[in-house]
Image (cartoon, rainbow, N blue to C red):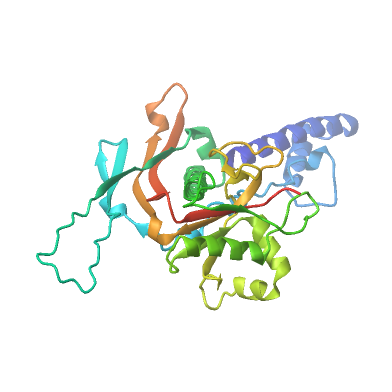
Length: 354
């Protein structure tokens, strides 16, 4: 701001001297008096007038406001209620953060009307489930000292916020991808939609498809409590077109609770994973969808999901320690995981192609 003002004053002075000299030569007046007058006049606000002599009149206004990109990918209600093991995170140095769960998959046999003693012993085996947290690192952003002096906003604070949003967006995308089954199996059903063509060659989701998924989960004896369905945007829109009651209740802000129907707790997310409908196989995380690949709605049971936050560190180097470039540099590292604890009680609904 200061540099712009100084340049504006200098420019006005130069214009006044040049213009004053020309007028003085034509009129015989004193050049110093004429130039001084023009220089003073150049600072009088006269928006309706133009010309070189008034070049210094116009001023730039710097609000200091920063407009950032719009995104909802860093927001996710489907993570609410997943058992949080952050307090159990252990660290080995700065690189590896691991949590350990114990799985006991065998129930004791139950004797009914037993008459034989002593009662037989039965060992309940247990299994260790080590879960290593993912490490998220942002690329280094430089901020020069020149920028800090010239800009009207706090660029370092803005950069910090953008790094945080970028990490949040990526870790939630990876979370929903991890909760989705890799393929259709007996324990983790992946079904395809059966509705009408939406005009793009994609079959819409209909309520009958949700009933089909429910029946498969019932047969697997998946607990009724904690059945969580995360709709992709295509399927959310399909249901909104089908059912006005769903529309009214799904966006009910008064209760603050997700809409529930058919035993499912409904959530939605804009960046669900893609599948190939013909094979019902999930694309790898970060893979680019090809023609015919479709987004999927993801099902998981709260009984088979875990999450944990590890350390978050900011790395910052001040410009004064870097005399050759005089740049501040910063980036972040964050540890986080959301994943299923067993290969069961999960599923997906994929839009089929016509």
